[in-house]
Image 1 (tube, rainbow, N blue to C red):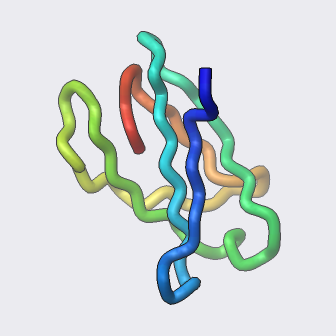
Image 2: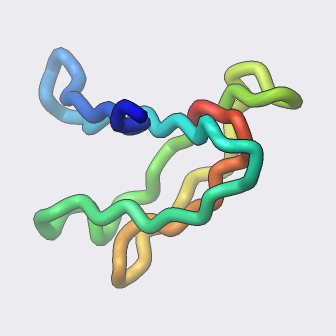
Image 3: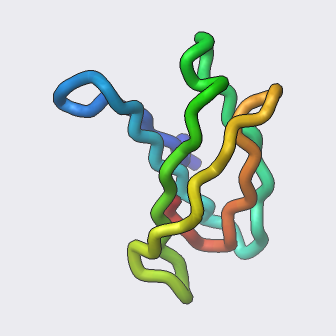
Length: 78
């Protein structure tokens, strides 16, 4: 299987964009750790496409001491 993650900087280099695909039939809990200190104070904006969502805007994800913790639904792109 190819890596289901892709990360890149926005054109102005002020935003980190991360795409995560969960191609499995089960939800997948993950912790995303972004090196450096700025992320520790910033919430992450989220959008998701899945069997029940079409580019749905989700509540912002607050940072935690270990990174950003989230659960990705089965067969989704967040």
